[in-house]
Length: 203
Image 1 (cartoon, rainbow, N blue to C red):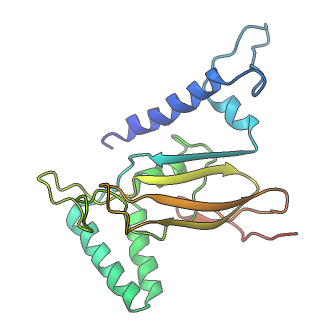
Image 2 (cartoon, rainbow, N blue to C red):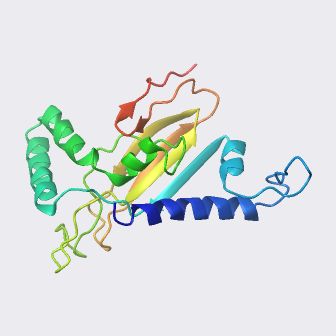
Image 3 (spheres, helix red, strand yellow):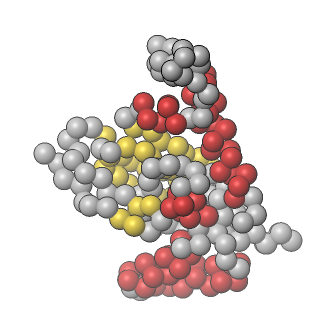
């Protein structure tokens, strides 16, 4: 798929660079059996951390025609107004099934063992600045969820995961999340490629 490989490589480059630059007091260098420094690929850093969050404009797109995506968005808004939440879920899943990031996580090509809270907000890119209109330029970009928050943790409770549609100063809509971390969390509720785990329980 166009550009997906480059986006996956961006993740690997960033996480490998973080591992290579980590201070010794923060991450003890990994070494080969002969004592020589081990190559930094990011996996040692990830395995050494209790909680890892990866957030930003990850730039993954939706592999569907623009006309189809726009029609789904219109129908989602109409069903939300009418309180038909089951229909909203069906329409959202039609789009998210073709989301490049969820497909990448499910296939293991990047973001190993990362999770994402359930996406319930509309695509956050690309808007005409200062409006609620998706891209009307000659490029007519397909609306997509480019802005995401992923996490890698065995003890996390997602309290909130939303976008801010009213923030129209950019061609993106910002995304924010609220998370509870710690030993009071016994299981994780998460979504990877459309699959959901058990509900959280607090001690």
